Length: 162
Image (cartoon, rainbow, N blue to C red; front, side, top):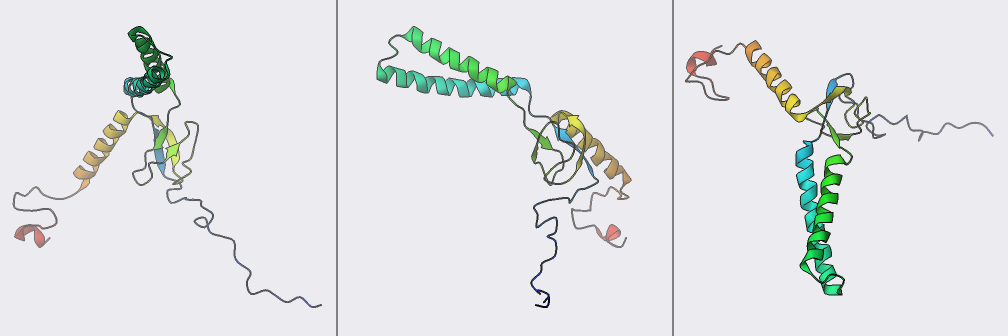
């Protein structure tokens, strides 16, 4: 039987079709470290207290807890466990690219969502400082005069001619 070419042969799928995103391939980004340990400690303690109150309520209704001292012990234990888990639990780093902000592992060298290469890990405050410095550099590089009559997106009569 002779070979008959099939017209339905499909080409190799593109990167977008395969789910690979490389829109920022070759760009540099940072892994932004999560919030401060003290913030995570407070949030963990707060969530632990909620769980402790629920367990205390269930214990009162089932008859397992009888006095105020046992209520406080149960709530205290859950607050301590929640605070410990919040402070020392696994951290969720984020990609610094403003169009991405995907969660990334702490050992990743490339963002799986956007394809940016990570230069390192920085704190959120350092990232804000870098953005401010970049904004200032870009603002000084622009050649726009300061004018009290100009409005955003609508220059005055003198600067409209430029």
